[in-house]
Amino acid sequence: MLIKMKKITLTLMILFMTVVGYAQTATQLLDQSATALKAAGNVKIGFTFDAGGGSSTGYIKLQRQKFVINMGGTITWFDGKTMWTYVKANDEVNVTTPTPEAVAKMNPYAFLSFYKKGYTAQMGKSTAKEHEVVLTGKNGSPFKKVVVRINKSTKYPSVITMTSSKDAVTTIRCNSFLKNQKYKDSTFQFNKKNYPNVEVVDLR
Image 1 (cartoon, rainbow, N blue to C red):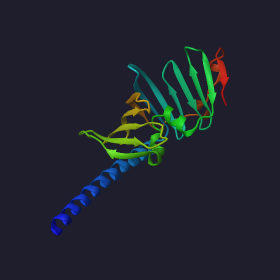
Image 2: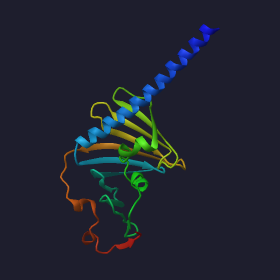
Image 3: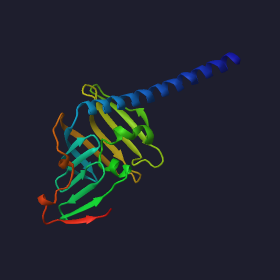
């Protein structure tokens, strides 16, 4: 009986160590992806955005914590402190000072800087070309679940699927990746001269 109990205990220990090993591997993959993106410098990423049964294309320009996202009908600028959101249909720009959680919801790559605090990472179903990491949100996390597919060769995220607390699913597919881009500070700020007729609504 004692020998049997020892075998069960040993089996449970091996299973526990295996699970921990997978979690560490998932975290390491995200670390590698974050490092690869940082090494790429300023980048411009072209993507396809699927949400709510609709699909659109756009791009995001990144410079550390700054970004601009252009989706045609909507453009968002963030200079690290202030966010401007232009909605073409309303001919209106909303100005806010967003929380880190709000920034995370806007910038799909923001998880690469806060996933260690807000999520539990584990390996998903990988393929010959991509790793899959599944992030499960903790209490207060911007998303309930985030699934990241990472290119094994480049280490860059190729597909990001985010599930909100209300089970709304958003999928972003990377179509192009340009690194070492040169941007001015003004790239990440709304310029009223370029939109002379829009209404600016300051919500700060």
